[in-house]
Image 1 (cartoon, one colour):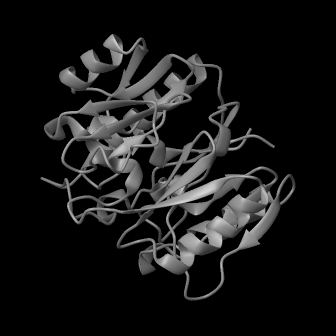
Image 2 (spheres, helix red, strand yellow):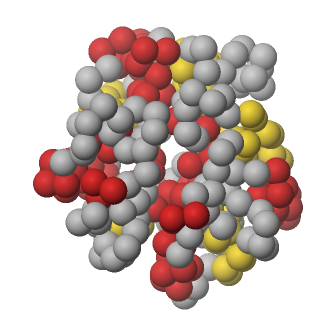
Length: 263
């Protein structure tokens, strides 16, 4: 089954924003208490953007007691016909992944990560023949190594990155919107990190949040409000849809956080 690992976007598994959203874990971007109603409106706009690009959106209800539950990307990594279900890197979030595993079990082999290993899906970026995996405050080496075993079984390599302490996840600072291409935030990653890529679109660090993208060939979704990044994407041949991510940014979440692409 295709999904996140090969950039197809047939179906997005999503989850409603929690009524406890204002208690979501934050620490990097936050400047104020986020607004639940505004976040729900932004999520609906996000869903509309996915649907406009041909993606079916499947939305699960919010989980009581889990303010971060709408950031569903972290709960599963799809590799071929498997769903790798990690131990999430922040203790307050462990448990979110259980209902995701139950939902996916009808169509995919469920592989649970062993105790002691941790990984957030937000630290995983797919690039052509490999998975890029960030070692961060949420993802440890045991978690990355566990994922690498299953990636190798599916014919993919794995490349590890040290996520800088100025950001939460690897996906916060880079993405791969099309074959051969990386988008990355200047100052967070360097040319030597991405030497494997045929093309690197470097986004100025002050607009680095826009390095997190969702793409459909040369059609791309990025966060609204980043004019330099938008111009760079246009110059690279992408047509662009923007979504207001202001409320989600307040709790360190990006576009990709809100979906697991499963087909």
